[in-house]
Length: 235
Image 1 (cartoon, rainbow, N blue to C red):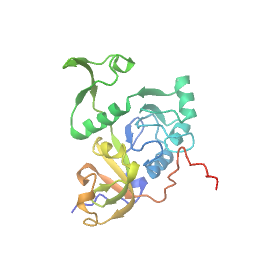
Image 2 (cartoon, rainbow, N blue to C red):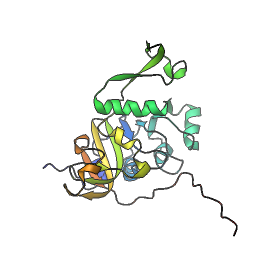
Image 3 (spheres, rainbow, N blue to C red):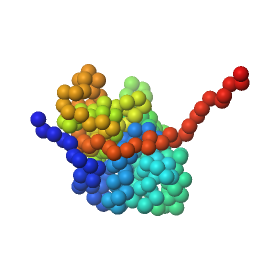
C-alpha cells in the first residue's frame, strides 16, 4: 500500500512557489490548517492567490500572510474580521473577488468532481453576474460559474491515516471536505495520524484518493474568533 505520509509541514508544502493559487480550508478560525499557514509564512512565498471562505483575523490564520504582503489576490466570501485586509483592499494593494458563500463552496466541489461549470441563481442581477453568461431555466434566470483551478488545496482534518483517508470533527467539517481533490495536489494536516485499517470506514468523510500528502500537525491553538458566553444567572 502506498503511503502518503510526510514528516512535516515543510516537506508537505514542497513545490509551492510564488504566484501560485492555493485553496485553504476553514470557516472563520475553525478548522484552518494552522501548521501549513505557519510554513507558508516561513517559506516567504509571495504573489499568492488564496481561495478561502475568509481571510482570518489580523494576527491569526491568513492574517499572517496578509501582514507579510504574501497574498496578491483573495477569493473569499466573508472578510469582515480583518482590518489589514480592509486597508490593503481599499488602498488597491490587494485584489479581491467576493463570491456568495454557496457559490464558493460549489465552485470547489465542481473542481473536485471534474465539472467545469454550473448554473446558479445566486448573484443574478448584481455585480456578481457582470461579464458572466446567464441563462433561463424554467422561467428563472441563472448565472454560469466556473469551477476553480488551483495548484494546491491545503486542508485540516481531525484524524487521518497514512493513505489519506480523513475524518473531520464538528464544525471543522466546513470548506475542508469540498476542497479535497479540487486542486492538482491536496495536502492534509491532521491532529492524529494512524495506520490504515484503524479508522472505521463507515465514518470516513473523504477517501484517500483525494489526498496526495498528509502529515500530523505539531500544535494547534484553535483560537475562537468571537467568544459568546451566557451571563451568570443570579442565585
